[in-house]
Every structure is written in C-alpha cells, then in structure tokens.
Image (cartoon, rainbow, N blue to C red; front, side):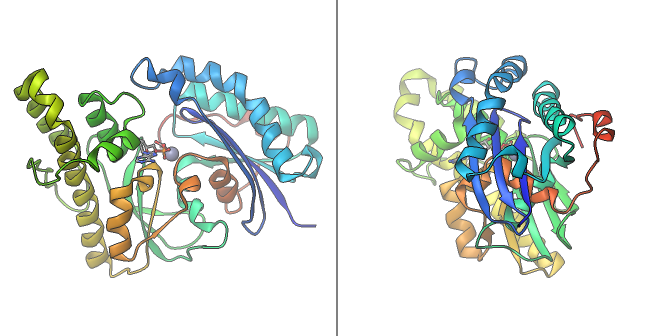
Length: 325
Ligand code: KG4
Ligand code: ZN
C-alpha cells in the first residue's frame, strides 16, 4: 500500500489540509481562505486569524480525508507548517497535528513553509527535477534560491524590504481595491495602459529585491492626482505599477540565470498566480506550479515532508512554532 501523508497549513490566513501519496500524487487539496473575514480590516489580523483557524482546522482536515477517500487510520505521517508565519496561527495547526499524532502514534513532520513552497514543484504530473533556480514570491517572502536537490535550498537573493506580494497588496490598497489586493490589482491592470506612468524600481546590489520605493512612488502619484482625477487614472496606475514589479522580478530572474548558468528555472508562491507575471515567465521558459499549488496549501507541506526528518511520538510534543527563519 502506498504511503499517505496528511499536510496541514495554517501559517497565515488560509486553513488548508491535503492528502498526498509518497510519490507526490495529490489525492485532495482543501483550502479555506479567511480573506473575506479580514477584508473589513484591510489586511490579516493575527488574533482573528488564529481564532478562525481553530474553528476551521477540524472540518478542513475531515474534508481533505473525505475527498481523498481515506480514514485518518490510513494516513502514515502528519506534516504541518512549523514556521515562518503568524505564531498564533501556526500554533493552531501545530497543536492540532501534535494531537492527531499523540492520539494515533503517527509520526509528525514539522515543515518549513518556504521548503513547502519549493516542494509544490514535486507534485502531480509536472514534477521539476533539481538542480534548478527558483524564484519564490509570496505575500510574506521574495527570494531567489538554488535548489540542488529535493529537500533544501540555498538562498542567493532576498528582499531588503517588502515582499512582492506585499507590494501588490499595498498598491492595491492605495488604489482602493481592498484586501486581498493582488488578484484585484491584476484584474484592474488589464483595463489600463502599463506605459501611462513610469514607476522606477530601486536597483540594489547583487540579486536582492527592493519594493518599498515603487510603493512610495505610487503613494505620491495617488496623492498628487486627488480624488476626482484618481478615479479615471486607477486602471492606468494599476497597470503601470504592476508592470514595474513584474519587470523587476523578471529582470532579476534573468540576471540570476546569467550569473548561475542555471537554465532550469521554476517559480513558486502566491505571486506566481499573477496573470501578468505568468505571461512573462512563459516567455522565459520558466516552470510554474499549477494555480492551486501556488498560493498557500496543505499539499506543498505534505510534499516537503517527504524530504524532511520526522519526529516520533511523544518527542513531537517538544516541537515549537517559529515566526521567522
Ligand atoms: O503564497 P501566498 O498564498 O501566501 C504567503 O505565503 O504569503 O501568497 C500570497 C500573495 C498575495 O500577496 C497576493 O498578492 C498574491 O499572492 N496572489 C495573487 C493571486 N493570488 C495570490 N496575485 C495575483 N493573482 C492571484 N490570483
Ligand atoms: Zn506562502
């Protein structure tokens, strides 16, 4: 009988659980987004997120097992995000996973969320084989990494300030698009002219990123226009702002390809769901995980667990969550 792994992800505002097989077949992948709950606050409220994870974790896991057509008893290993993320939110998933393992004697595999994003490339039909160069762009992180083998990566560039997804979300907010902003900004940008405004992205040394300058440039543009003029300029602003961030990501990726000589390139993380970025990545020949595996999900956590050490019961009770890497 093939090995079954239950993966649990609660690091931010998605309560997610999935069942995968040892060879990377996704049997179920349930994602319950709390986005609507946080929308009224304009962003994720950590305490609200933790409480919602508490309500959702049990039904989401039950649904993942049910859709996979298995019982908890059939599962061999429980994988859970240990960090980085919101500590209160992480603790809900981690405590739940510990409880499951404690009650059933199963092995627990604590997984790093970023290893999880990279491991989204080792699932399903299109599995990307290391070594490859990986751009990880999400709401919380933006980094370039060399992936020499499954189960680890070496960071060769990171962001000095905001993550790319954060820049999209904050830009969207400046344009009155609410939370979550990335997808809404992407939609509005389709109606605008990307050359209408010139938003410079800071050039920093090496393979690092910086997005705080472009965000401030948008803030000034919005302020200078005033409410009336802003209304008719919103689509152009969205398109120009988005184009600046997308071209910064693509330029850095191309530079990394030149510097490392690595032509096998893949992109993971929620920002990879971005239509404009995906189009540019296709031109570069980069591999992109399917949409359902780009944003936070349990399948990627279960996938990473295949290459991470497990902790036997009851040693797992000592495993703690961590907010940053
Ligand atoms: O990987 P992710 O789900 O969460 C983190 O680990 O942070 O990434 C979330 C980010 C958001 O900031 C959002 O801007 C972007 O991914 N995003 C999208 C879409 N879905 C998520 N951007 C454009 N289009 C989407 N459909
Ligand atoms: Zn993520």
